[in-house]
Image (cartoon, rainbow, N blue to C red; front, side, top):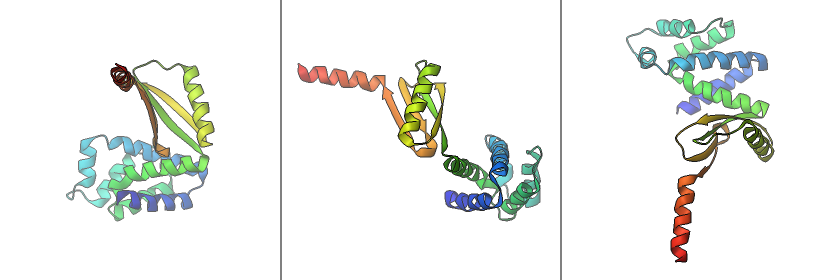
Length: 176
């Protein structure tokens, strides 16, 4: 249900803000989204003991210089008791902006070092495949192999060294 609610609010944001303003709204929502990491923040926002106005002021205090439209949007969320949906709204807004700009971000995970040239090559290949601008960020992880994720497109591909070893062992055992 939260995704459906988020889509309705994002649709309203897309209609109310121009492209430049949307970038600012996305950045503001990203700042608020960082607060959701804290259990205290979630407790305050979901607490029935804290007034709607106090919750709204608390959320607005996280923003540096919110414009009037954004303040009105936060007011609307507060009045409708939808501040807990800010996280989903941010994700959906980022997705809609990516769709509009035909630009998506992905991650490359693995315990292997990935060079800048390899990242660039993967970006070119995936951009051509999806007819969009794809940007990757390489991150070290404990995954034995390489895993590529583009969440906004629902794409995940991987090459696992463990799986390769298991398949080679199985193939050798069948040959014997």
